[in-house]
Length: 442
Ligand SMILES: [Fe+2]
Ligand SMILES: [Fe+2]
Ligand SMILES: [Fe+2]
Image 1 (cartoon, rainbow, N blue to C red):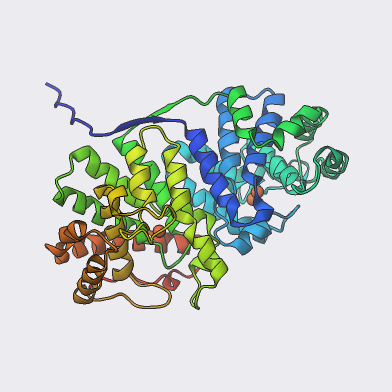
Image 2 (image 1 turned 120 degrees about the horizontal axis):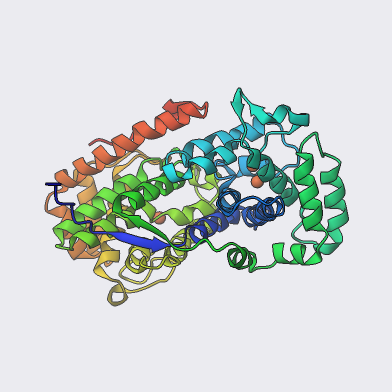
């Protein structure tokens, strides 16, 4: 007899494209020059592919790859460099390699990761069929063309007036940078004014989704945890000082939820919320996250926005009502002096209070650019003070106080595992793995 299947506590159905677009909007918030870049590339790649008669499956891959293609540009400097026309191989490698490494950790994204890896390979009259001894997917050349068209668009100027110059500049590179058939497909698309008006419309993603319905994607617990892990890496790997942060928050929050008697599904949602609570930080330039000197007023305005974006992006997923609330309210304080919603005690659910304590606990027990970690005793004293001063929920604090050593061990183990993983990532992209501070094991 076959063994009885374990009852899963979690299954979800959501629109992956909408989620990726939400993610790409966050990445493009790091600077005004980038606004809408990923959306542009997604739309352009889709239409060039469609005109070439590609099947729906490949068009979906192109649209998703467009929404994620520069995800490996971790710093603002790299991101700005990625926005050049005909950029150097050095600048291309600096973001295509990490982007590929990150995305290929999630199996369903393997094909998308391969497109991202090669999205700056020049065609060179056919020599671009190969790159570094490997076959380049044909559609990576479409993504390249779409990206380069997008960087030529000047968002502050009226779009129709820009068409002749963009078309001429791209056409001049037919055969050298781009595949001639891709250029032909683009010329056909570009001849319609409506294409450019759709491209630069605020509803561009809805227009694309109407044309190419992605439909809901069903995921079970294991599949979704893998996706959440990918997002966690994308969030945390942007700063050497936070590479292990969300993995720590996730296990601490999950343990606290178990101690509070939440049911299995709620405990799992708490873990997911912990992994994704800082997803809004994708809108914060890496240079601010890594600053060793005092933050300026402007730096703070950037930072203060991140839980708002965490809340909004997670809220867009059906079935994520609790997760978005627990994740998005982690900087609220009982006295109403938190951010960004400035909610007070009676407006905050216990789950949100657990997340706020888990985040604070993890933040003060790990190493930061401006200080080392605190000991367990100092951590307890600090949290006690916050509870007494009406900042954090005393009942949520009690869930840690009971046995701080067990929780701290869990945090240290989870952070040690993600520390090793991030060191491998940093080494694989050619940077010094020793530049990552080790998480505190006290
Ligand atoms: Fe790029
Ligand atoms: Fe790009
Ligand atoms: Fe945060």
